[in-house]
Length: 133
Image (cartoon, helix red, strand yellow):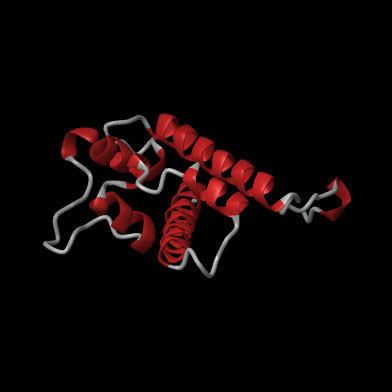
């Protein structure tokens, strides 16, 4: 599911960028890149979209039960018509589509900042004739 991929891309990209930021802070005499420092200051490393540990475990491990074998979706929020069947609504107090939009906006912002820092578009262009049916 696309939401799982987007969640994990955001989580682990922020994790690595946070480590890079810490490395730069610890090695100011070795690394002197003002543009990189500016890029890193514009990033929200502690993104509230990623705060729910139990939700994050579901996104990474595809389990719908926790370590105590409790179901991760509350009974009043189970809805088989929803993507993830109510998992988002249970843990994040947001509608699935609202959460997905917020997550995608964060990814777009991060991508735009990366594009501004690197100066080149890292996304590949795809022509219709390259698509496989």
